[in-house]
Image (cartoon, rainbow, N blue to C red; front, side, top):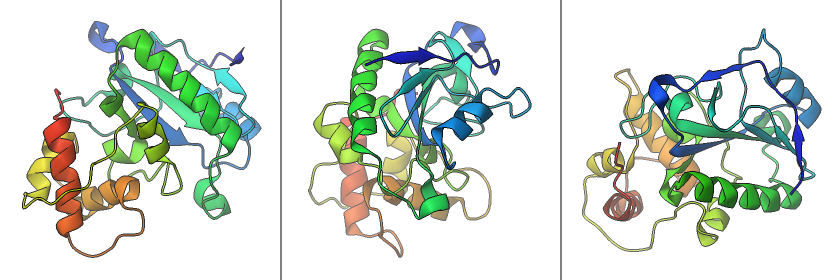
Length: 227
C-alpha cells in the first residue's frame, strides 16, 4: 500500500492527551477524489480527515494519526462526545447520493482493509470501534451509506456484524449499550433507528421489529461500549 503525503492545515492536537480508540468511515459525497482532496486541504472549509482513499486505491494521508483531524463534527459514540479527539477518520472517494449511491470500488475496499488492519494493530483498537459517520451522528449524517459492505469488513475482523438469532429485547436499551446515542430533539428515535438500519438492514422500513431487536441484542451482548 503506497501512501501519498498531502498535509492539510485543518488539524490540531488531540484534546486532553487523548489517543485514538475509534475509527470513523465516511464517503466524500463529491464528484472526484481531486475535488475531495482540495476541500479537505482548504483552510476555509475547516474540514479534514486522516486519510482519503481514492476509488483506484490511492491513499493520501492528510493528518498524522496522533493529531486531531476535523472529520466527525457533532455527535457521540458511547461515552465519547469529542469524537475528533478520540478517532481516526477515513474518507472514501465515492459520490454517494450525488451519483445514485454507486458501489465502492474493489481496489478501494482492498486498500481500506489493509489500512484498517494496520491502524487497529497500531492503536489496539477492537473491531467494534470501527463505525460509520452515520452511527455517531444519527439524522445528521448518512455516510458511508447503504452500499458500503460492512459484512466484508466483519468477515476480515475489521468491524462487527450481528449473528442471527431471536431476542425479546428492548431495542433502545440495547442500542444505547452498543454505542448509539439519541439526541434530545424531535425525531431522534426515528433517526437512531434509521442509522442502525442504514448499516445493518439497508432498505428496512416501518417501526422497530423482531429482526431489529434480535440484531441489536446480539451486538449489545457481545460488544457493550466501554464509553
